[in-house]
Image (cartoon, rainbow, N blue to C red; front, side, top):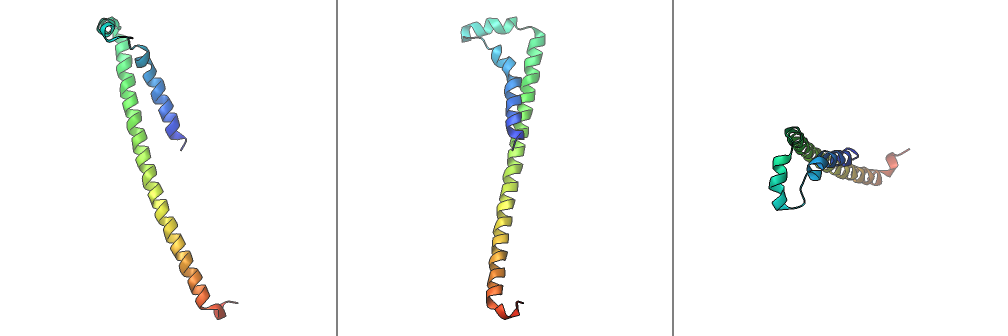
Length: 98
């Protein structure tokens, strides 16, 4: 399903600014966090909300895909059973065929 890889790439790209802003050490993190401009902080929060939304959408699509896959398997099994029954009926009555 080509949508899932695309959503994953979007999630990574949206999360990239947050990763880029991550300081290299924990001790340095507290002083760096105080230096992040409010607009950057808002952007990071917005990006995190978008990443969460995309993750939920991917999970929803994966669930729908699994349901559809199960339905197709059931339909395939039903078709195989009907074909078996048809073959059996044909074998039992060869005189009726032209």
